[in-house]
Length: 148
Image 1 (cartoon, one colour):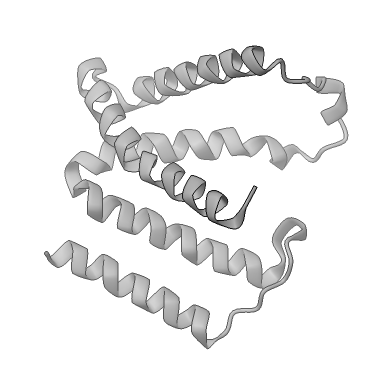
Image 2 (cartoon, helix red, strand yellow):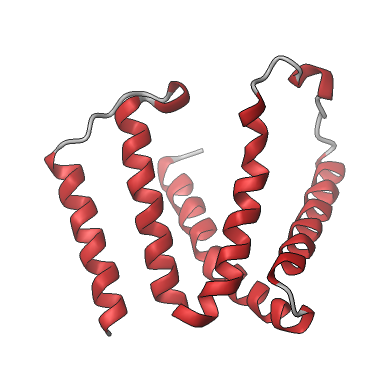
């Protein structure tokens, strides 16, 4: 895949998150529970992924292939559920722009930290003044969005 196609695909995926938040928030109002809404959202997502796997006739691994993995590799789903529930609750209260400004700021803070230590085998990319400046500019952007 060409670099530009990859960038466009990632931007498109990022653009879907605020839309997902508002759709889930609207569903949450109808269902009356952020937790139940998160469950329904993940269930629908799981069904969509299953349909996709069937359509593309994906080769499925077996659970026995995962028995040697550490316990924490299974936490991705838990982290996703936490994220969805928090956004369902807070996006309507804080507004989409401020909520996702904070989400992106949190993502960048942890991402820079993970790069710095080479978390889980990542290539080490030390924190330097440009990365710190980028985080500060991002923080200023979130502040300005909140004040607007």
